[in-house]
Amino acid sequence: MNQNLKNLSKAIKYSDGEPLELILAFIRIFLFPYLCVASLALPWWLAIISILVGIAHIYSVSIACIACRHKANFISFMTSLLICLIVGREYNFFHFQFIISLSVWCLAALTFLKTNFQIIKGGSKYGHK
Image (tube, rainbow, N blue to C red; front, top):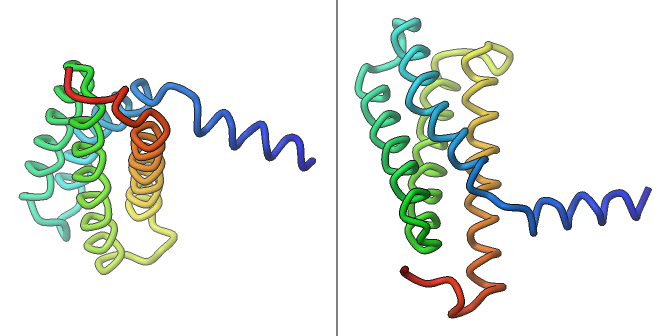
């Protein structure tokens, strides 16, 4: 069991993060605006912020710059936290909108930690292209 946990830790740390970041960006562009429109309690500007963050995330992955990806992941993490706080205030913790928001926040935290690890591990190897 201990070896399995070590293997999972290695897979999370050393695997490539770009596909996960792209999935997160597409979730922001397509799923969150739907959640904002479907819910009358959520402000409309959350949908616009979510779309802009998703587009910025796709752009940062497309230019293959680890520093840009790290900044986009931080913005994504903070936006996810904001959305979680707003959705959590409006709904209970077992509502599907809060569960989706919390899941996206966990993905954003994971991608932020992955790029942070890559920068620390790689040093000057990962810079602007």
